[in-house]
Image (cartoon, rainbow, N blue to C red; front, side, top):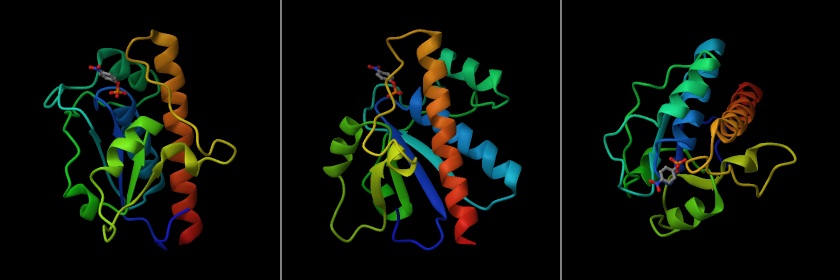
Length: 160
Ligand code: 4NP
């Protein structure tokens, strides 16, 4: 998956940084803490509409339902500097991946791919945007976030 032997930092990127990428950040932070791993985890959005905002209340709720508190996260916009500050930048959907392509240079530190590329059987897939959906859509986004997080910690555990 990645050219790095050991992944030390992961940035999840979606459109608004208030639904999918904060869920993925929360899911991964929880697994990293549970397993005593050392990993920098962050998230950002390609858009600027929600900078400084907490996650969508529906995202906070579905994470809380699964024991993860993401209420303290605040949205930020992805920046060119991120391309050199993270080992792995994971786009939640193919549109996010296209947008990241405009920011990245050939010699950037980060490897950029779809988050679901890490999940066996789901390569090339997108995490559906739940923003205009309902609680079921947020539950699906949480489920996707968790399988992505599990794939990452399995990868790290396999490296060590
Ligand atoms: P996210 O969802 O990219 O998963 O955070 C969205 C949040 C906000 C908007 C679209 C998607 N919006 O259009 O404001």
